Length: 296
Ligand SMILES: Nc1ncnc2c1ncn2[C@@H]1O[C@H](COP(=O)(O)OP(=O)(O)O)[C@@H](O)[C@H]1O
Ligand SMILES: [Mg+2]
Image (cartoon, rainbow, N blue to C red):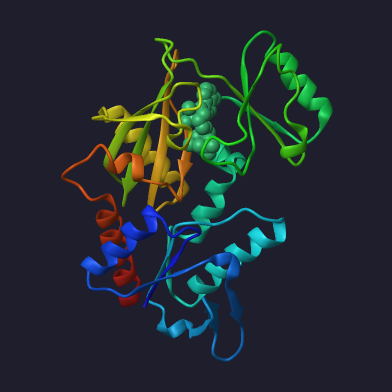
């Protein structure tokens, strides 16, 4: 049996369930924040009121990891590690999920791998925060919650909005240079990488500077250049992803990677393709990895 850890019963989960069905595999959904584990001579997991031996689980697909206290987030990742320790494929793998849910870690990894990424300044002390703000003098800077997604909680700091939203940032301030599209457009690109290949791409055009689909951005089919394909594949490799959603922006200095998502949504991306089923491609690759793992 395959497990899908998901927080919603909506479109993505249905697409995944359909893809499992098309591949003649049984899949069940579980909410990771309602799941429990038992560590004894017969390791088990409890989900949806069922107690299941890990021996019965052929693989776990991670579609959602909810926010929570530090302890909760660690425990949810511990559950995924627990499965991997028992040779169950977790997809995306737990280590890459850990790396990418934290924007600080992603920025460090991209930069250390010489992948162009915006200049970023991070601190948890107010003195350095002030220094960083002064260094931007007159330039716009973006402040992001380090565990954020879907464009939530992002703000521009400038003369009208001098201080970040202290209450919602939990005392970690991630400031980044604002990337201005050379044509003044609000647009960026999402490249979807599976098994180190770009399998689908789109342009996202926003009505404001936050171009997330969840923020109402318009999705358009896009054929990426070789340079963008290389950036996306290199980013995915640097973070060790099985599959990923890589966000690329264009600034006056060229293309730059702003984010590498380990739990990317693909509803917007699917809408620009008629002849491609993204969920099917993901699940085929997931089943391939599970099979490889079983043989090893
Ligand atoms: N440095 C930046 N300069 C300008 N716009 C940005 C910058 N970083 C992010 N954005 C905009 O905000 C959106 C969300 O940022 P991102 O870092 O991908 O966070 P999230 O995890 O919330 O998607 C991007 O898709 C882009 O439109
Ligand atoms: Mg993003």
